[in-house]
Structure formats: C-alpha cells, structure tokens
Length: 193
Image (cartoon, rainbow, N blue to C red; front, side, top):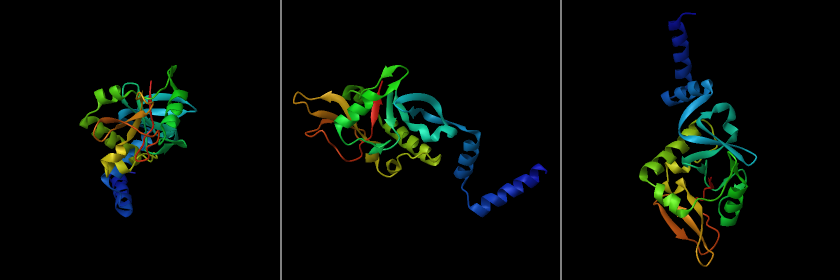
C-alpha cells in the first residue's frame, strides 16, 4: 500500500471518529509506550517509589504521583489515592512514613520547604501535569484545570506548641495551623524523602 493511500485511510478514520489533533497525538505517543512529562513520575509498588522522567504507558496503573521539587512526591489526585484518605494529618503522616524511595524513608514535608519552593510557575506546572496524566488515561486530578483550589492542600511535618498540625495551601503558598487534625477540602497526599 502506498503512503498516500495509507494517509487517506488514516484521514477517513480521524474524520469518522471525530478525533482531535491532541487525541491523535496522545494515541501515537501511547503506542510508543514512553511519553516525556513535565515532572518525573512516581511509580509505586507496595510502599516503594520509583521515579522515572517519563510516563511508561505499560505501567500507568502504578502511577502514584509526580515529583514537584527534589525529593517531594505529590499524589496524582486530591482526597484519596490507593484507598488512603488525605483528610487526616495522622493518616497522611503514617502513610508517608511507611514509604521508601532509593533506600530512604518517607515523611511529610516541612512547611518551610514548601514555602521556599512555592511559585506560580510550580502551580501552573502541577495543573499541566494533572491534565497530562488525565490525557493518558491515568486516574489523576481533573478538577485542578477548573478550580485552582484542587491543586491541593498538603499536610506538613510541623506541629505547633499545642501539637496542632500545619497544612500548606498550594493555591496561595501559605501554611496554616489546624485546630483539628482533619481538613476535608482538596487534601492531597504528599511524601518527602
């Protein structure tokens, strides 16, 4: 079959299925199996993380999140990942401490680490990464493209002198002390190594 004939057949399929240019691109990228991403992607097996600089389409079910700054892994979605709810500080803390990556034990990030690295560019790239993962059929956060709030609220390792935990609001880059160890809007798991 000549190249021109192949292109005509391909055009006919694209027209018949009403595929967008982006969908065609996603299709061809996913056939290659490896797709470059903005942030390194964190794959999780049991409690062990592995970072790769790309989406391995064959391992998309193992995608847990992505590295937003050196050693800080953000979950792919708000609320719950792998049946772990992010609304309670102690649950998030215990989850983080069970995780390992390259022989290091996980923990929650400090509020200072998050504040130092927070920027509008970071939030923009997190939203782009959420969209990227959704485009490639990873069960990732869809609301962040519509509502900035859903980029996430993250629990921090810090506690006040009254033993109240801090949380970090990614929308505006602020850390606040929680009067209760529970916060229920847009929480997102995070692990620091």
